Length: 402
Image (cartoon, rainbow, N blue to C red):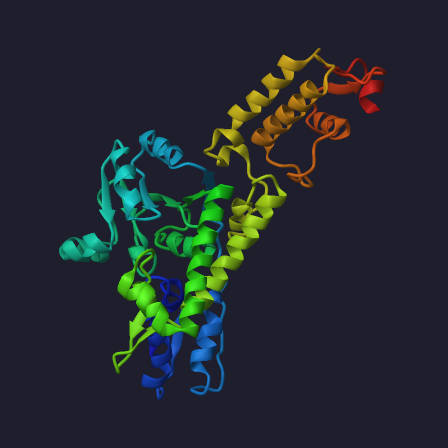
């Protein structure tokens, strides 16, 4: 018995109620067969698989095959309009596969595109089965852009040399890898651009809040299933949690047993991003997490940011800011504070946050001069005897060395 893409039992647990039941039944139904589970991203599901297989086998044997992301060029953006602008400016015959966050984002996104675009979702799959079957068989799409939901996260492959761009809005590294895997390379030299959204602190906080709210409901359901049934199934005054449930052979309703471990994993990762954002002035570091997952250098060049804040435009604004302030004297505390805030903002926009920067720590004169020196600006912030600040050019090499 071969179970391909078995990670789906965990990946889909928050919107398919029967995945836990499926995982539990497989060792029982196929108890006499050699059972092989296959996945490119098995790590999140291995523990639950071991629990399901306990008592049915002598132990799991896990084979890891080397995988490489050398052909992947990661890019990052912060707003959907940045991707739309990139696509509308693409005059090549390359194609784009875009995984939208949800159905409600699909049409607004499509309406802004100035090229041919197709849509694939659970709704279109059911309404147009022939078109869906054609997509599966041909393993390619005719439009320049294909907008898709999680319906083609796993198991749907595209063998098309023109498919060179994949866009993901996901905050789940495992999901991103699965989406990237929809592109199958026909030639060794084929490369893929992977565009990932760097979330804001607010985005991470909202997502974390919703998952924790769901986790609370699941915990309450474990304690009082009848109360959960009344509030979340019959009344459904707020969120609809029917998708978390399944009905057994006796007609009783239960929560999918994989929901809680799935929530724990997602919350743990988002909590990590949230805490980092609190320490680093709102920088959650999702881009760095994904670069580690893809085994890429952590440093991101400006060319790989679609956001102007990290592009050459931001570097130009940094240099213009310095030029505009050369020769200024800051006598009052308000002016000094404004200068500190602005120079820090312009530097961060152009080059990212410094290694030890924290939101609760102000930049002082020493830090500013270190930044100016490391950036080879030829400028210095000098404190006068009267306590004022003078922002000026360095006069000679001896002063520069000091």
